[in-house]
Length: 403
Ligand SMILES: Cc1cc2nc3c(=O)[nH]c(=O)nc-3n(C[C@H](O)[C@H](O)[C@H](O)COP(=O)(O)O)c2cc1C
Image (cartoon, rainbow, N blue to C red; front, side, top):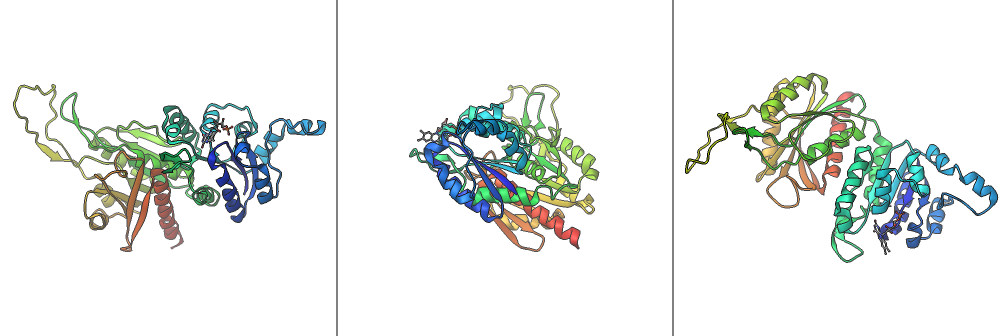
């Protein structure tokens, strides 16, 4: 692949040299584009020596009258001649420019003229990263279908600890490898993914629910879309935006989720049941708001329909992936669910701890496979975990097609 590597102005700019080396090792050609600020941190010569190519630094090249003439369209030429754009490190400033379509230097102008996949690896101080403006820009870039390689937690150059540190060059190179190798290997597959919580009404203003944020299910949808799959996302009420390209069916209760899943099962080749569906619902939904008059209130609950088991019984040739959120005996529960619910794989995560599971940005899971094996996916941002789950799923699909 012909890759443009955009380097912007941050302390982590020096790590882009290692990334350039890894991309070259993977067999790609690498054209480096540096912003003016990036050149405050690292010399273009480093990249020129590594890649064997002149580094592009300016939109307007005034080195000679001829150069001025040719450079007037170089940003379009570079955009057309390359297959993939990687920006690492991406500064808060550049994220904002890309998200809003500003084009005031070579990198941002070329980006607007670029049609291929874009991989963005931000790096900055943790407070800058967590700022609402930066997060809104990141969401906007995700919504454009770009692949965000999330910054890691760690000690930052400014002396603080938190999220914002550039992902390791090897992690960014892996993300690039996934895009280049498997850009559309799931084309033709339809993933039916459930996400988020359900809400089971008690009365017109109250409901029983759980702490699921929908982040894991939405990350799975994004990861499947990245590889060319069609995605039907059946989602409970959440406060996050769905990835661009997913067909979203919004539901509220477990019964509505059951209807949405069974009503679309025919169209799906893979079903991933990531939603945290209520196991119980109020036996009676009060038509009026329940009054505070009693000293105590007892609720009678009745079980909801088990959607995973229902799909398991009716799955035909479809691949079924279940999720198990447990507070103990993770592996045993995952294995039990795999057998009882007729799943092809169960993704189990410990919930109730800190830093992973419900509401968290990160997750750590164990995959229970039909072979009896377990695959550990250590703590990582949910999108990274999702990509690995989709990767394992793609391998199962591939094995089945071959046999
Ligand atoms: C010492 C120093 C370190 C910086 N590190 C970062 C950083 O890690 N991430 C970031 O977003 N901005 C960082 N900045 C600020 C950017 O360099 C600045 O916003 C600049 O306008 C980015 O321009 P660019 O996006 O065109 O490269 C740093 C600035 C200085 C002076």
